[in-house]
Length: 192
Length: 93
Figure 1 (cartoon, each protein chain N blue to C red):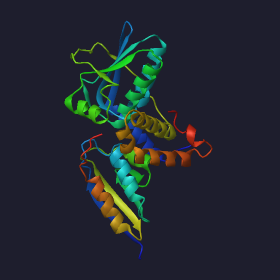
Figure 2 (cartoon, chains in turn cyan, blue; figure 1 turned 45 degrees about the vertical axis):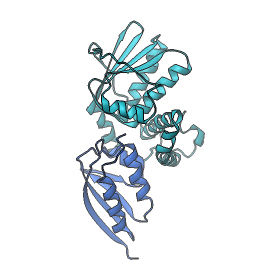
Figure 3 (cartoon, rainbow over the protein chains, first blue to last red; figure 1 turned 135 degrees about the horizontal axis):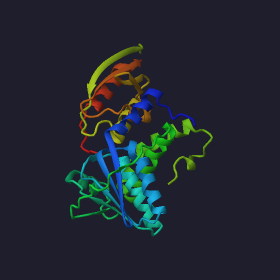
Figure 4 (cartoon, rainbow over the protein chains, first blue to last red; figure 1 turned 90 degrees about the vertical axis):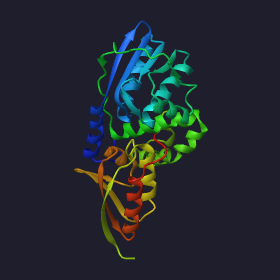
């Protein structure tokens, strides 16, 4: 795998962000709960996405993301949630809801125009029974760049304002990915 | 124009640190200069003209970042990047 640049030390540093956040899962009948403890950052987007996709493959039709112990979400994490919600909706395989959303995150979701796509549970349910810690998913720099790009492209797809908001970020990531993966056609640099 | 090198220290002010959008602004600004610009945090050295580098620095609110620039417009470049690192952006995501 070609390197999308950061030096090894920088990339190791990025992987180290995983220590700041833990994802816990629990399953009850056809519902999967994923609890975010700490900061919802891009370093955990791959684990989140993988857990959701595997659960749906195994018959889960309802995914709840519990944010009770979450400090905040970065845009990559939010975009990853949007990607999961879109995959579920497009395949008619269930839905995704967010639980215990604080005011700041609620404002963020409104700003991104996501409150119709991402259902918010209004009743503050306790999901502390979801205690299985998800393993970290390590990514190569180019995989990480693609994941960040894809997450933002999901956000751009669902709201024209996001398209403007993240246009520069998309442009930069595409340039860096093309430099790192010169044999890959631009259309394949992100899977959205 | 005479090539110079400059060094400065900046403190990250933004609530969520140098996440996607602030990092993009830094990179876009740095690219406008001929000077090479780097952000240093501890032993880490990020090229300010590469987004994945800046993101990987993981500079959170309160982080102290040393800036280095070398080139004909180093002084202006470092002032511009320092200004962005120390901006508390109105958007928080």
